[in-house]
Image (cartoon, rainbow, N blue to C red; front, side, top):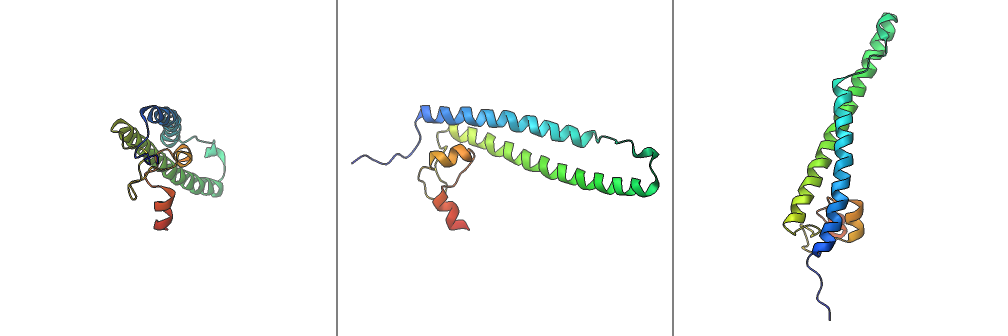
Length: 126
């Protein structure tokens, strides 16, 4: 009987590394876009509209800025998680469930490359 795999092979890890590096590149670009949107709020020329509209615009701009801040924070966390996954690839612990110690399914890792829990462990949590 074939022994159950306890870790992914180096070639499999390399495949995941490439996937993660690509996701990381895109995530960093999106984070840079969000950051520049936050630091350069585009003025829509509200100077010449009446006071009432200006107040509405300001309220809308504040809400938009909060949403951008939340998106940027989420994106930063995503980047941190992807970078942590790269470290796990380097020390060959990538793809091992931190709860069960079993391998996380490849399909799950392709969808969520920074996953540290198998579906079995994730479902137990909820």
